Each structure stands twice: as structure tokens, then as C-alpha cells.
Length: 548
Image (cartoon, rainbow, N blue to C red; front, side, top):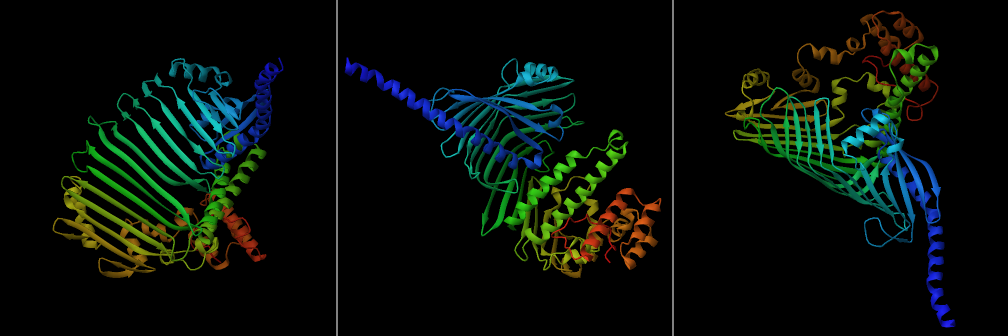
């Protein structure tokens, strides 16, 4: 009898031990969930999409959490807040969930909260997904805080207002560690959208990624995307354009500097009269300061937040309070924009190291095209906003060096465009060598060599810009609406209260210009008081000639 009691006590002890450990682990789950949501919000800050933990109700062996997804920018903002129900099972032993026994802190089973939707959206989703759950998700939180997730959507079919759409299903899975590293996998079935005169079809999509970190909301790592057989029928055409799309990216950090490369390929192109059958584009960015990029990311998130709050409508500005609110937002927008420019030059770009290199290769049955742009930042001193306001073409040219190259076959050009080559050749922008089109530009500060001919950067710029536009680029007064006499007065006296008053009284100066000039005056006053743009809000660029 004693032995029997001992044997019977074993499962009881195990059950108590499992219940106790489950209770202890459950205390950690809420904190882990909040941390995960915070990480996701940091990653999606610039997209204006935000997650929020609405409620968390604990049970004996788990919890029920309600999370909310909201967006402040169309088209997602038009859907309103979207809630999800998360049924949480505490570890350490996790059973069910469509998989074998798992071990971890908790498992979260997620589904869309259909009851929280308004009736219109609920009926729309019910019809589109034919009564099935739009979304199903399973996430396991490990003991160290790492998560393993798998989300999938059921097939969607839509026929509304002359548009039919089919999405066979999407599956997103991967891992996410506490240090924001992990892997990601996305699989999508056929996606097809049809209207009366247009059609888009993507038979499948596959994305695999290895996430190695994050800078300022931008994900680092290696990613590989494939979407074969993409087909687009544009309005007014009878033959669709089809191609196999591929994209790769690789980014990382070495010695506190971020570098990255992106490559896009479109192969087996059909439906463009054999003009082009393959296109490859690459972009390399080298040596951007990590701390500066982190700061830029935060400023961009602030900028996006301000833009989301700005509502330009009669209702928003018909009251003094509404006008004041919009004015404050405009001021904040200007200041944040100025800070981004200031941070870019002072903290992100590295002299003689920061580099941008892009290439474009195109092939067709009648020839090839090769374009190459390789530029390096050479700025010695970080200009403040007042300096930038008065920069001319040659001032900007001193900030970079590099080469621009073009080598193309005439046969690759669309029919009817060859006549455009003669004036470009006469001007010296290109060289015609038989069936070849070539151009080489060497940039070395304000000294430029165009196809063997030396000139200033300003001269090159005037050759590239159509007649009539170059004057506007070198004289900002036309764009800003500032009369010539006032502009000359600004050049001599600077931006004084008297100048601001004259700008306000002028019928020719837009209100936006007056506001920008006020911000510049404030910044100028801060500098006179011994403050610097690096520590005080900066203003947006003003027209050339406003430097005191």
C-alpha cells in the first residue's frame, strides 16, 4: 500500500511542479511580449504602423492578451484600428498548436478579432476569405527571450466595383532574438488583380533573409527575393509585359561604419518589342557612420509623426486654436528637417570614405547599355543651414568626386529617339563612335572633365539642364517668390525683423516662404546668442542669397 501511494504521488508531484514552473514562467511572459512589441514598433516606426498591448488577463496556465495594430497613413489608416486575440500558454512544456511537444517560456496563438471590427469591414473580410479566419499565427517565446513565429493567411478572393483579386495564401515565419537578429522566410502563392483594362499577376513570391541587426529602423543582413513570371498589362495596351524578378541585398557594420549592397534583376523580359530582355541594377553604399544613422532614424520617425498630425483642411484651420496647432506643426516639421540635414553632414557622411556606386546594365536583341556612377563624399567641413542656403553649383561640387560613364549601342534606343543624339553630340555631352554612344565625366571638386574637355561643374550643370531652368536653379528667388529688390536687401542686411515685415506685406511672397524665412531668422538669432545648430533646432533651407 505504501509503495502504491508512492507511485501515485509521482504524477501528482510532477503536476504540481509543472504548474508551479508554469506559473513562474507566466510572470515573465507579459514582459517578453511587451519587449517584442517594442522591437516591432522600432522596426516599423517610419511606416507609421504601431502595435499596442490593449489588455493582458492571466489564467491558471496562461493568459489572454489583446493587441492592437494601428496606422496613421493611408491606405492602412482607412481600415482603422485592428485588434488581435492572443491565447497564451505558459511553458516550460508546450503541447498542441499543430506541432510536437515544444519547450519554452510561452506559446502565443494569434487570430484576428473579428468582433472588434465594424460591421462593414467584418462582412467584407468574411466574404473575401469565404468564412475562414483571415489570419492564424503561432509564436513560441524561448527561455532566453528569443521568439519563433509562423503566421499564415487563408486564400482571399475579391470581386468588387469592377476589380477582382485573388491571393492564394501567404506564410511568414522566422526567428527573432533579443538582440534583434534572426531569420525570416516569406512564401506567397499566386497574386492576381484584374480591372477592365489592366491586370497584374505574380504566380509566386519567395523571400529568405538573415537579419544581423538594425540601424535607425533599417534592418541589416542578407536577403534574397524571387518572383518569377510577373506579368503586367497596362491600360491602353493589348500585350502584357512579363519578366522574372529577383532582388538581393547585403548590409552590415564594420568598424562602426555601415555599408550595404542591393541588386535587382529583371530577366526573360517579354512584351516590349524585344528592345530589352534583361536589366540588372546595383547600388553600393559604403562607410556611413552608425551613430549618425541611428540619430537620422529617430529624426525621420519624428518627422513622420509630425506629418501624420498635419491635416490641411478648412475644419483644421478655421479656428484660432486650429491655426495655431498647424503653425506649431509646421515649425516642428521645419526644425526636424533641418536637424536631419545637419546630422547627415556632421555625423553620417565620412570625408573621403562615404561612397555611392550604382550600375545599370541592359541587354536586348540589338545591343547593350552600361551606365556607371561612382561618387565619393569629399566635404571637409560640415556646413550649417545658413551656409547651405547660399550654396551655388560649384560649392556643392566640392563635396564630391568620382566618375560617370555611359556606353550604349544605338540599336537599344526606342524607335524615333535617335534624332535626339545629334544635338547632344554637338553640345559635347556624348560621343558618337559608329554604332556606339559614349560619355565619360570625371568629377574632382569644381573641376570637371567631360569627354576629355575640362570645365567647371557649373558649366556642366548648365549643359545638362534645359534652357530656362538653369536660371531658376542658380537664383532661388523665382522658386520662393521673393522679389529681386527684397532679395538684394537680404543679401546686404541679412534676415532682419524689417525684412520679415516687408515679406509679410508683399503680395508676391507665398506664406510658406515667409514662414521659412522666419525660421531662418530664429536660427540666426540663436547663433548670435552663442548657440549652434548642432544643439538647437535647425530651420529648413531658404533661397540662395540669404546668407548674412
